[in-house]
Length: 159
Image 1 (cartoon, one colour):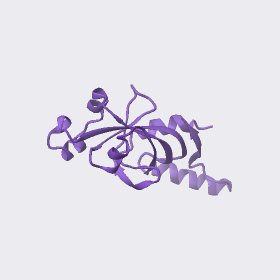
Image 2 (tube, one colour):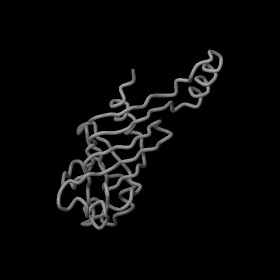
Image 3 (cartoon, rainbow, N blue to C red):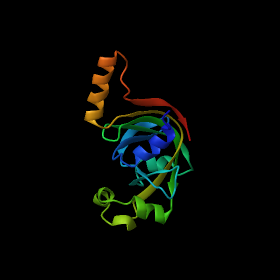
Image 4 (cartoon, rainbow, N blue to C red):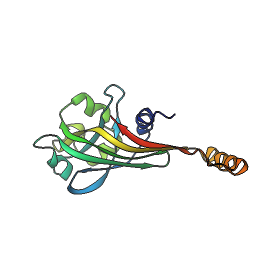
């Protein structure tokens, strides 16, 4: 049996883009997620203070949704959780990347930088094979054995 929660965290390390939004407010927007082995249970994002995401966390944590559809990581998930503003400088240092650097002229010290922490609560998760060779092997094996191919697992995960 597949450990979907473990697979989720392991595969999130390879996800480069996900859709993030505040529940019931506005729309989902493409963001670059980052997980941290030193702070398990959190997914970090960098945005500007004027964005809907940043404004939505000004008065405290809020309900949020994260949607992942990443073929390369073999991860598909609809995640419910909490989004909060963070002033954790160490987390900002760990999360900072050349992508974030291209958005902020003053780098990490830019006064417009806003670090967000997404804490998952529950998710519908599907994990699939990430190898074309594995996919074709499973399809051929299933056809020869007259059975369904094993292309991954899916289910509900509680964090």
